[in-house]
Length: 407
Image (spheres, rainbow, N blue to C red):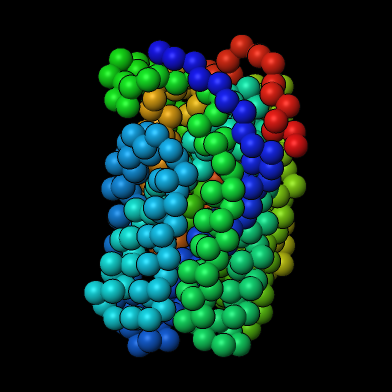
């Protein structure tokens, strides 16, 4: 095992802020805009569903291979750059060739590239800030990603409305260019201060990670989080459409933007607090917000009050976005499997999300929206209790924090 120390070039943290901002912009282009675009190109709902499912399945299958790939690449910027190039190709395929084979290839490319991008940025953050300052760095990541998501949704929505849905994907490809520039402006910080092993495949570290009961417990907590969380916004959207008619799009937009504002405001505090008071109290805060959100969505009578219920999701999103990579770092100190750990937790996340939408849809059809929201709230309670009773604290012993993350 070796300890490597290097200091990032001046401005590296600001460059990483821009990377998170532009990557969030880019990922927004592959959200609901894909279904809208394919619909305007005369695709049937079955064909659209198959294309979207293929992208989701690619992401699900790619979680572990992508984590291993990022672990094996010495320069994490190279992995992130490759993912951005793949996203450029996927966006251009969608924009220029909205036919079945190019679209399916684009969905698979984007699914795999996204699985590489997430751990690569987390690894760059860890190498740049060091473990002691990682919480604050992840808080900054989440803040700039949230700002990027909100702005990109507005700009791309206006672009698609006033020009053409095709422009959304041309803009997505174009936004990859400043993301690449910002990524390579980070400099040598991608190799900086962290405890690591000198081997690409650390067998002893891998055995220790897979035998760590904390990983199993947290994986279950992550799955329960998304089993409760993933279906709430789609169900709320359906409820809004039935209640609000022509104002549904405006209310849904508010349901998306308001949580992003909460995340942008709250994430830096979550990162700092994780280093001061530990991880578990914040996990309880994030997981505890889920049943409250489900309850509010079930009982609030009007359309606009749904936005209040959605605002609670900003608390959960801020905690989850900061703490998932932070706990992965805690669980893999001294090994070279940080990104594999993120892949394992990502797999748990996708499994929970996939089951959530299917299960809640069936319950909503059979028993009504209110019962579906209450069911999701109940799962949130189970997740909260699991964190409370089973999840141990993972924060390492306090060490001096490098001033570099404060620039």
